[in-house]
Length: 245
Image (cartoon, rainbow, N blue to C red; front, side, top):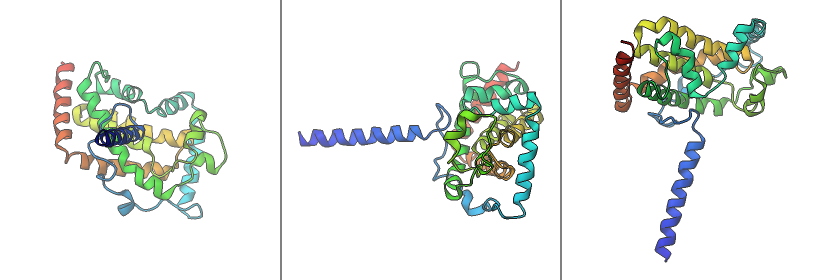
């Protein structure tokens, strides 16, 4: 009986660990190639964000004002709001037209798998610096509303540096550019705008976004050391070749 209870305890503990790990996942259904601990540590090679009393911070303040002015453009404001979603289907939809194929779990399962696993992996590089720096977000600093008010309570105490949304959007753009190099200019532009949307909505400083773009390149380089990633990239390229005929 004691042996059974011990086995049951171990199984329950393992299940709790699985549920806990699942709860920390940002992208639904993703299976990252590397854990947070396995990813390069941004705090070791990327400078801390500008302090609020530094000259560098004046640029962030200027860009915050720029972002607010862009909200007057209704089309750009709507784009910024749509970029706030971390639903992988929504994220992929931003790139489908430029990519030349509708990117969905049903239509392009191999490409979709590459993107969601890649985005989750890249986001893992942001976890340590967010916890270490705990930078105050712009809308909290200024005590002003954002373009996406329903996320304010959730993100108010979540570190601003670096920008996870920027990493995710940039990762999608770069991975899709590897699958379809001919569309790279258009895809990368969309990825760039995903980052600027975080400034426009009021959730990130420009320096958060800029740091995230560099971090994404480091994360992508790490992904290329994964055999599973290399195999999935090959599957995605073959799928695109079939779908784009």
